[in-house]
Amino acid sequence: MLDAYDNISIVGGTGQPDELFALIETKDPNVILMDVALNGSSGVELARTISDRWPRIGILAFSTHSERHTISGMLAAGALGFVHKSASAEEISEGIFQVAQRQTYLCQKSRDIVVRDYAAQSSKSFERKHTRLTKREIEVARYLALGLSAKEVAAKLGISKNTIDTHRSKIMNKLDTNSLADVTRFAIREGMVSAEDG
Figure 1 (tube, rainbow, N blue to C red):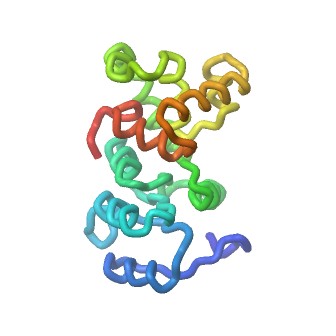
Figure 2 (figure 1 turned 90 degrees about the vertical axis):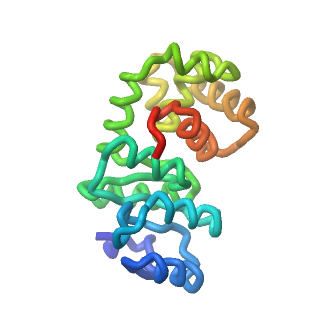
């Protein structure tokens, strides 16, 4: 599928963790499209190892599994995106482009799962844990962590995109970061997206 995209160059592929590490060293990729179950190994542990050793490489998790704990586990381990294997070529390529730019990305199926689970959470208990963010900032941070654009968040909350941009700026200031990926990791770590540990 990806061979059809002129602006994506596939530099290698493997099903073995050791070979993966060797490929990283020799091919120096921008993005790794990584199966969550690589030859029986834990995708979470592999993602964590890659993030620690090669932090500049973006990881896009790729799986037939779409449970909330699988998605949140990979994101918490350092992956910037998650696509289901049933995703279209357009979604997979978009995920690669976003992750290459250090942006977070969830395919539609994964996003639906996380948004549905988020909607079922108790906001009261969450808000007690996150006093440094206002109630509205918590809402905005959650949706941004789910991969929604500022325009999409604005539509969901019934406010303007400029207001969302202001909230995003305040969130990043409070978290002392200018990276949306850091906001996503904070959201995963603090239980904003999933109450389960990956």
